[in-house]
Structures are given as C-alpha cells and as structure tokens.
Image (cartoon, rainbow, N blue to C red; front, side, top):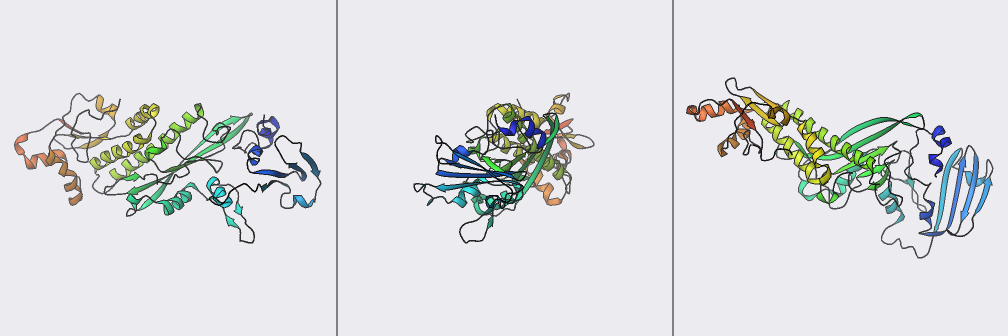
Length: 395
C-alpha cells in the first residue's frame, strides 16, 4: 500500500492527487542507473537514501535542519539523482527530449538545466497553448491554408474522499478550423502523435479514452486533475481499462458534442438564420466524432446526437421553419421529403442573397403548379432537402 493512500496522508493532503500508485517510481530508475540517491525533506526533517541495485542493501541517513544536502528542498521537497550507466545511449533521444515528451502541463515551474546552459522551462500553461505549439510545428498539410483555433471545454466534479469533499477537473482542448462552410470542424491529428491525455500534467496516452487513435479525429488534449480513480496501468504504459475509463470516455464524447450544439446555435444566430446549414453542420461534425469512437460507444454517441436539433421542418402555408430533434420528428403524424438535384442549389442561393429562402417559396417560384405540401423535412446533404428519408437515421 502506498503512503499516498494512507488515512494520514488523505487527511493532511486532501487536494493532492498522485499519478502513481506505489510511490515515485524508483524501480524504473534502475533501468538506466546503478547509483541512485534520493534526498527528501518534510517539515524541515530530511532523509538521504543511497541505492546501488534492486537487490542490494541500501543506506538510509537522517539529515538535520541546515544540512547542505537539503539546500533548495526545505521545508519540503524531494531530489532524485541518477548517475547513468555508460551503456545508456542518448544520441538518438536526449534527456531534454525525454523530459519534454512526458511533462506537458505541470502545476509548478519545471526547468531543464544542462551544464552551463541557461535553464529552460518545460511544459505549457494550458492545454490550449500546448496544442497551439504542437500544431505550429506539426500542422497537417491539408489545413495549411485554414485558420486553426483551439476550443476548450471544462467539467468540474465534486466527490467524497476519506470523508472529505474533493474536486476533480476535466479540461478538454481540441483544434478546429473554418473551411468552406460556416461550421468549425474538428482538425485531424498530425502524423506525429500528440499528447492526448495528461493526468496531473503528465502525458499518459496518445489517444482520447473511447477513441481509436489511428482514425485521426479529433485532435484533442484531455487534462485530468484531482481524480483518484482515473489511473494509469501499473507499468504506466497506458490507461487502466476499467469502469472509470469508460465513464471518462463518455465524458469526452459529451464535451465534444457540446461543440456541435454550440456550432448549431451559432450558425442559427448568424445573418439570415440559415437553419439548413446549421443542420448540415451538425451531421458533418457528428460524422467526424463517430469516425473515431470505439464501436461499443457508438450507441451512446448516437443518443447524444439525438438530443441536438438537426432536422429542418418547414410548414407549408406560412413557410415557418424550425429545427427538431429526431424524437420530435418521430411523433409527427406525417411529413414529406423531396428528391430533386436543383433544390441542392437553394443553400447556395440563400448565401448569395444574404437570407435563407423557404422551400415553399422556392418551389412556388419555380413550379407554381406543384401545389402545397403539408410538411417538408431535411435529413442529409448540404441543401435544405434530403435525398433519403431514413437512410442515416440513428439506431
């Protein structure tokens, strides 16, 4: 059992959430060193631990207040000193590269010092600044002419730990860009993997929980702080696939769907209130998310999409138009859909004249003899009229 999980530690440090399960990971140090020194200080009382092998005995010495080895550590802190084996090859990847790979969003100031070089800061202030950096150096070739921006969604949860109230925060930053249409679509992950999940600022995974990283969407970074349930594997080679992993996966999908709702609302509120374009945008963004979601979570993603208005309904006569959710369409007694290639131009015409034309108005001008239909519904495509009735309906 780790001291992190003891009743005393939980009482004294309610806001501390360790990334590890069994301490500071001292065993991994023996992968590159046979000469390890740990100096730690707590309440101005220090200890020095000297180790040369996993199986050898070790020396533990108490250090009094003012001991030279405690300089820079008092009143509390820890220093780990490794003397690397001669066989360790750092020609392909330097110590600085390794440090910068793992430390992404540190809560405290982290500096890298080498010989006589000036100290350089490691990590970023936020997920947004981290993604801006990585996209500045690894931007996808197919988005070089588009303006990229980072959207951040945040969720804070309160739970009880050892009888005390504890808060866990989940910050999801993701890259979007505005292309040929009104919606800000999700950017594709660059060829070089981005850090996708950080726990307490440390990189732990290169794909979001619940997503298949090789699919390319979305380019996002989840920062988790204060959670004692969302953990890495013991070897720290990835995330523990347990109930908490599945819960956080659904949380990520939900935060991404907030962007879809935001985009629908923003487009509807723009000049001309282009409902058809807002409906098309919802489906474009939905398809991007669904392309990367793991199979077992697709039904959950569909349920979230069902809660977003994505179907344009127009009433004949007064030509009023509104957006409905799938469940609201299901209860309509009847409605009509039309298939006509010329109607696909309606969206373009609407953009050119600065307002969205109603379908009834458009048909009455082109074909007055067509008469009136009770209801029109738009389901697919970028025009206001769908090609299929239930071709892409949710399961």
